[in-house]
Length: 231
Image (cartoon, rainbow, N blue to C red; front, side, top):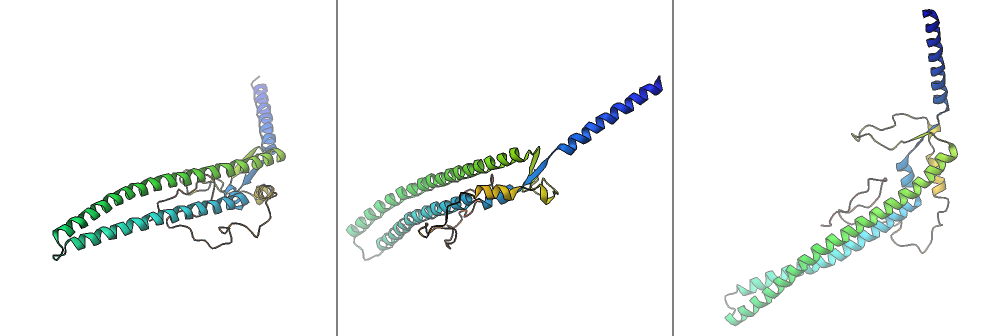
C-alpha cells in the first residue's frame, strides 16, 4: 500500500513539473530600451526645440527686467553721492532726496514684479515640460502595447530601468533577439515630416546655447529636469 502511494506521488510530481516546464517554455519574454526609444522619437527632439525656445524667451524677458533694475540701483547710488556733496544747497539736497525716494519706491515695485514674473514663467515652463513628456510617453506606450499584442509577449522588461538604489539595472542580461526597440522606433518615426528649409531657427542643427542654469534636453521619460532660475 505504501509502495502504491509513493508511486502515485511520484506520478503527480512528474505531471506537475511537466506542466510547469511547458508553461515556462511557452512564455514569451521581450525587452525594450525605453530611454533609447524616447530619445530617438522625432517628437522628443521637436519638444526639446520648443522647450529651448521657451527658456530663451524667458531669459530674454528676465534680462530686460534685470537691466532696468540695475539701472535703477545705479541711479539711486548716484543720487546718494550727489546728496553728500558739501557744495550742494539745502533745496537741491531735498530735491535729490525726493528723486531718490521715488526711484527707491519704483525699484521695490520692480523687485516684486521680477519675483512674480519668475514664479509665473517657471511654472509655465514646468507645465509645458510635463504636457510634452506625458504626451510623448502616451504615444510611445500605444506603439509598445500594439507591438506586445502583435508579438504575443507575456512579459516585457525595460532595459533602461534601474532598481531602487538607482545603481543596479533591473535587467542584468538579456539576449539581443529579445529586444524590440528598433521596430517601435521605426513605427514611431514612420510619419515623421520631411525637414523644411523654413524651419524655426531654434532647430536641432542650430547652435543655440541653452539659457544659463536652465535645462536644454529631455533625456528619458519620467525624469525630466526641472527648470531653474536664471542668474
